[in-house]
Amino acid sequence: MTAMAQLLHELWQELEGAETFCLAGPMGDDARRLLSPGARLVWTVVAGSHFEAMTKYYEHRGWGPYTPVDDWDYQPYLDEWLRVQASGRSKSP
Image 1: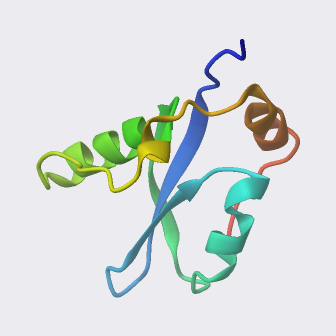
Image 2 (image 1 turned 90 degrees about the horizontal axis):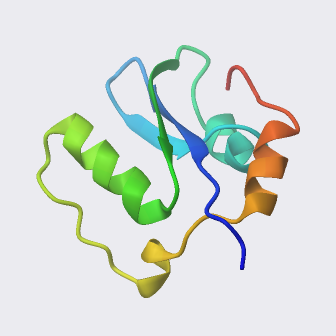
C-alpha cells in the first residue's frame, strides 16, 4: 500500500486580484506559466489530497466548506508525486 504523500501547494495573486491555487514544483508549472509577470506568491499549504488542499484553501479564503465534485477528490496523493515535486521547484511564473 502506498503512503499518503504531503504535497506543497501555492496560492498566487495577480495584480488585479485574480488567484491561482496550484501544486508547487513541476506539476504546477503549466498553471504558473499563465500568470502575469507581476503575480506574487501569497500563501502556501501542505496537504495529502486534493480534498484536503481545497478544504484548507476555502478556510483560508473564508468561503465556508469545500464541496467536492468527484470521488477522486478524496484520493491520497501518491509518493511518486512527492518525488516529482522534490525534483525541482519553480520559484516564479
